[in-house]
Every structure is written in structure tokens, then in C-alpha cells.
Image (cartoon, rainbow over all chains, first blue to last red; front, side, top):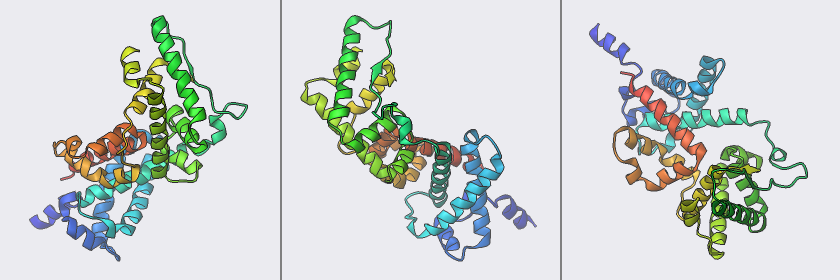
Length: 217
Length: 80
């Protein structure tokens, strides 16, 4: 009786199985009990992590995300390398899939046309007037803004310009911009990274110290 | 597009901080579970994995996933 009670109350603890046991039990065909325990662990984790991001039908949405995550985890079971606990690794996948889907739904109506001005050009950069700046600071800011604009327009490739404008200036999520540009998130990060390196290099060539600018303004 | 002084400064900070050895989102994803565990175990994740910390500081989407993962793991830790 006591053992049954202990088993019941310990049912959904991540420590229920060792990492090796998790992998063994979840290889196809997966053990039903292990699957149920993992499902509950994921569901609770996702409910906590996503509750502020889901406005309606929270329970059902989290159930759906949990189910999708389970399928993904089972598919990837042989890629688990033991660098973190199994349940941590599984939760990572669950969170990644759920947030990716939430972002996709939130941004699904955005197109690159939304990022451009009516004439089809990328928006010019302007600084809001700021009354608490000295004339020297204003001049410094104006100069850096102009230079940044110049470098973005003249020194970057079209793809780099699109990526920098979308992600760094407009604040769109990198994975959604990647989808619009028919690439993946990792490639998008590299594209933006290359663009940042180029921008930094152009400022250095012109003898403009970005650190001095940041200190002075 | 209109920038205020603070947005411009943030942009310029990101550009000034650019490093040649930055890791991408794929590597960040691979290592995120280890990083999160170090953090939750009270160890210095930033010292152990500085490039991952740097990536999280500069990639909003990866940072969001990391923060959600921490939240999820904290909840799961409560399951006895």
C-alpha cells in the first residue's frame, strides 16, 4: 500500500527515471507510462512558461503544444547526448517549438512591404528632436545617424540591408524574417552578424569611434 | 524611420560590441539546456559559456526561449 502511494505521488517527478531510462523507455515503441510522465512534465512547464503569452483557451493550446513537443522529442530521441538532464533537453525542445509557433501566428500577416516606405524604399533614419541635448551632442548624433544610413544604403548587400532593417531597426523576430527571406534562423543571424561587422568596419575606416560616441552622448 | 537617442545608442552599442567569434542560433540552441542547468544549480553559467551568454544578450528570440525554459524548469522542479 505504501509503495503504491509513493509511486502515485512521485508519478510526475523528472527524477522518476534516470536519463538512460528515459531514452530506453521512449525509443519506439515508447513505454506508455514514461510517455504519460513526460507529457505531464512538459505540460506543467509549458503552462508556466507560456501563460502570459496565451490569451485564450490556454489549457487547450498548451495541450496541443505538449502533444506536438512529444512527437518532436520522440523523433529526436537518438540525438540526446546527455550534456544536460533528459527532461531539461526535452523541455528545451518543447519551449522552442511552442514559442516558434506563437511567433509565427503573431507575425503571420507581416510582409516585407510593411517594412518599406510608400515609394518602396527602406525608411530613412531620423532622430527625434531631444531638448536635453547640447548642440555638440545633437551634432554628434546627427553625424552618426547620417553615417549609419550611408553605410546601410551603400555598403551592405540587399539581403543584409533587408535583415538589418527588419530585425535591428524594426524589431521583427529573427525567425520570422528568416521565413520571409526563405532561409533559416541561423543563416539570418550570420547575415546580420556579417552586416554588423561591415558597419563597424566602415565606421573604423572613417575614424569614427563608436565607444567615444557612446560615452559622449 | 524615427529613432530616439536611446534607440540609436542601443543600436550603436550592438554594433560596437560585435565580435568575430559570435556563435549562431543553432549552437545556442544546442547548448541552452546545459546553460540553463548551470544557472539553476547556482553555478556561473556566464563564466562557463561566455559565447552563449553573449549570444543571448544579442538575440532577442533566443533570449526569450531561454527565459521561458528557465521558467518551465523552475515549475517542474516543484514537482516532487
